[in-house]
Amino acid sequence: CTEVSESRARRIPFSVEMFPPKGQLTLDAARKVVEGLRAASPDFISVTCSAGGSGNGHGGQTVAIAELIQNEAATPAVAHFTCVSATASLVATEVEALRAAGVETVLALRGDLAPGQEPADFRYAYELIPRLKAAGLCVGAAAYPEGHIDCLDPRENIRHLRAKQDAGADFFITQLFFNNDDFYRFREAAESAGVAAPISCGIMPFLGKSQIQRMVFLCGSSLPAPIIKLLAKYEDDPVALRQAGIEYACNQLVDLGRHGVNGLHVYAMNQPDIACAAAEAVAAAGLR
Ligand code: FAD
Image (cartoon, rainbow, N blue to C red; front, side, top):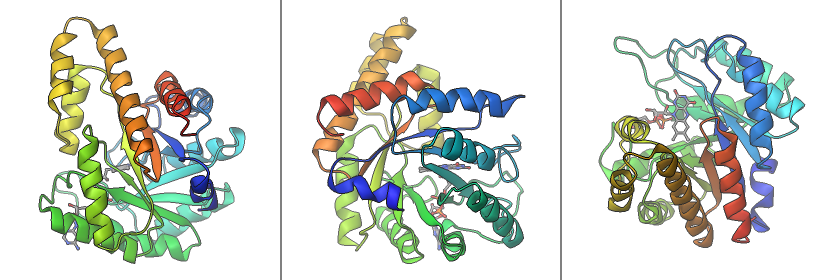
């Protein structure tokens, strides 16, 4: 956790997320993505763990990519770790592989079961966290400023956040959101409930209409009116729409930074230009 939290007093930690590239030669493709993201000088790069049958879940590419981030790119890696199909023995094996690779931080997640799939040994993230902590890892968890899709009661959402802290979570990264006021309200509620672990804000730019519709559907995040207007304005101009999406995300990041958030995390979607634009905007505002 040193790398994640040490720089907090001086500047706002800035990080990016990547996912294992699809298809063959994923490690070679991942290497190119990592190289590109590194140009943004992130404090860490997190790498997702797919719960689906993509071969990128447990036993897939996540650990190998975390290793190359950590060792080849000399950037701290955060490996996502889901409960889906995670038996106690698989956790032990994978933790050993992460530690051998020098990866010391994980993001503990429930993941989403496929229809008909039963949970393995851990049903919720708060059950997995102590196991990862006991292995000596620094452990983060997910936070939902607008609530999780399975939990629409805001007070319950905060109780579940607190339960993850009580289970040992050292920090949180949020689900994407487009209205910073949602985050500020959430932060206040979390603090009132005794959540003291740093919460990093996860921001994803909208790049196109179908991408944003899919994300909103999957995450339950709401689209504020200014975005709907931009989507309408640039409906026939995908290049301008993409640019507007990146600009909107940069403005969000700068506003969050000025409101003293604990961290800025960019869902860069394996596109280094997004990470670099975000890093530049944050730096230009004197926040890193
Ligand atoms: P939990 O914290 O376990 O919560 C899941 C649901 O159960 C919530 O609705 C919660 O309110 C509720 N709940 C919690 N405790 C209880 C309880 N005791 N009783 C009843 N209900 C309870 N998914 C992936 O597959 N791979 C990834 O790499 C990945 N990375 C992510 C990174 C971030 C930053 C975020 C925000 C999400 C990520 N996800 C990923 C998605 C995540 O797996 C899903 O959102 C999942 O549905 C919930 O995961 P969680 O860890 O928040 O679950």
